[in-house]
Length: 377
Ligand code: PLP
Image 1 (tube, helix red, strand yellow):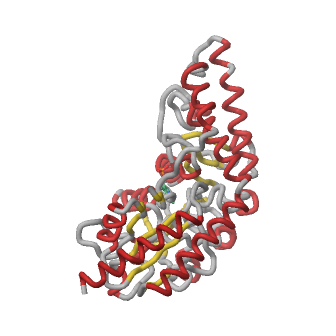
Image 2 (cartoon, protein in one colour):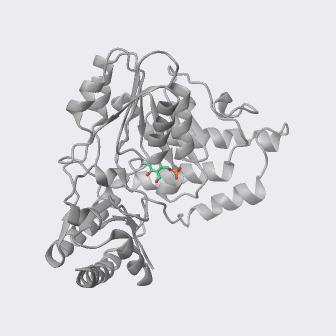
Image 3 (cartoon, rainbow, N blue to C red):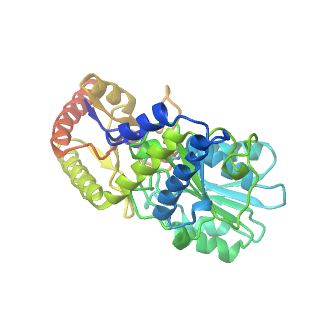
């Protein structure tokens, strides 16, 4: 098997087995229980927060654990958007866990603006963004790295513009595809909220987190026993949290090494695909090399994905006009020529991938693309 769908989820690090073992089978207590064995777990939780806070350059008290980034995004958006007058802004290319919250809020009567993406840069159209901002704007949510194209938005600039033109607005960034891949400093970015997810960096599924600036109190969306200082009730997923903190530490410390690996793997594929197929490589000036988005001419992305699956190569699709799958907004935003827009796939790398695997995958992908092209044209 050659697994190239790491933007969806990743294989868990072997190093985490020991941690999972400890917290599932030895110290499996509920930190809310009154006895010391359970209470001691608060020290472990605080250590995990300290680790994540250091990586993001914030205070431990500004980190809150959730079940996933979908929950973090919902908690931040529904928590931060109030009923005062004023618009809220996001982009057309956001992950569904942000985009669909804005659609819901629009249906509930909020004034919502979806900022377009510049197809030349893959980033937010900054001029259009400026036009949407005004002194009544309440909230902005824009992702740091796009999960389908790998394009990196200039969040620092977007926050600066927001502070200048819309001083009342709070700013959230979904950093799921960025955290541990590019350096993040929440102070430097000056964001108010940020979300991340453990299973995108080799930790088990079921654990995510959010940064909430200490001066930006928001009401919780989940009420209950008051865990996480009342911000997110529910018994803490201690094994998940401890694994996530360790995985973040490992992946962050390998950032430079991983970056070089992904550049090497992506460059190899780009060269091979360009020389041997008819394709458009959807890569922009500011990008993370972990995500490679390619549009092959005259084929259907989902058909290719399944024919690759039959050969043991696992990638994702991202079609703009598929009849059987929902349209990918991020791919629609790229405004590709029609003969390419159906044939989009996403290849995404993780720490376990090797050049040998990529050479093998490349051969298989080229064979399948050319066979499908012949069969369909
Ligand atoms: N945001 C982005 C940019 C993502 O890529 C994803 C998952 O693919 C999510 C949010 C949702 O993450 P989770 O699976 O932790 O809910």
